[in-house]
Length: 452
Image 1 (cartoon, rainbow, N blue to C red):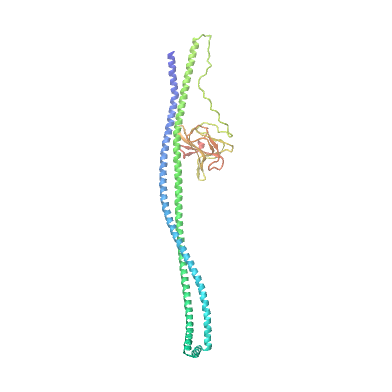
Image 2: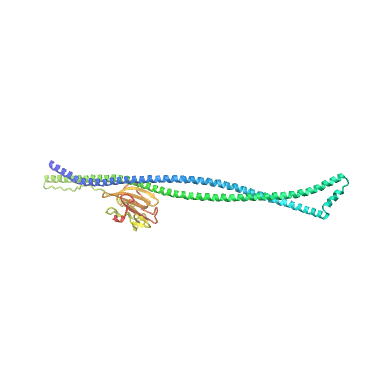
């Protein structure tokens, strides 16, 4: 009896080994491929980091160039300010000169008026002299003196009259000449100032032109600066994504190890259960043979393990797609509206599926680990998943979701709901944009070649 049981145990051990070995080989194969992909991602991320450093160097050079141009602009601004100050000074001088000219014109009018009045007086005196004989009249005045004192008085009076006439005439001539000369000088000064103002205005326009040229250059630098920054942001995002994918692959390796371990345990438990069932059957048969022939025993017991089916998911207003075989299943139910390929000069890196129903479920096209679950201006609410299928790595993208139900690092099964179809990001209508990448992200392939 002991030999028989030993033989049965040995057979059970052999049977169990036959179950364990393929699982271990499959696990080793999958993990090797994932480790290889992880190493490739690390190399790719290193290259991206190098590109980031290169772009940062370009950005530093652009900043230096921009600082130099800013210094030139500041210098021009100072020159423009100095020129404007000179213009204001000249304008004040011109206004002062204009004011003096106006005052001088008033003075000239007053002097001209006095001259006119005196000319009229002199003309009357001349006419009087002409009528009375001029000199004879003066002699009559002198000869009519009563005594010497009267003569002196009369001579003095005549002399004063003659001198007064001469002084009046002389003063008029000098005033007139002086006023004309002053007016000419002020007019010349005004003309000079106006010429200087024109020159300064020309200089100001020249400075403005130079400043405009500098501003144009600095705008070009800013545009390059912005473009380089955008490139850096894109590279940094790519580096971050590669890092996240690397972490997701590490989790996928762990998930597959755990899955392989679970399968190994289940296979071992199934083999052990089968062996126990055989032993029990053999024991029952031996016991039945040893008992009376009239007594028969029948075993209604059943052995083996059965796992309970998971609780059904809550019913959705729109049904989720049925899980199918093959590498990838359809991620949502709906109408195929756009395929993979170039359009409007740009690659449409996936397919679009539209459905007007409320709360349309979007599911994982294959089992894997979530790389990223986030919102972007282009994809809207999006989920990225890394997969290892038949020892090969793939990446799937689910974009424009209305809501996301998974997070980065989470393991998902094939057909597990990720969220709902939506219209977020750069989307013109409710639909799912779905991509498959051969390996890491940015290696898109036509999903129609993989979906079943």
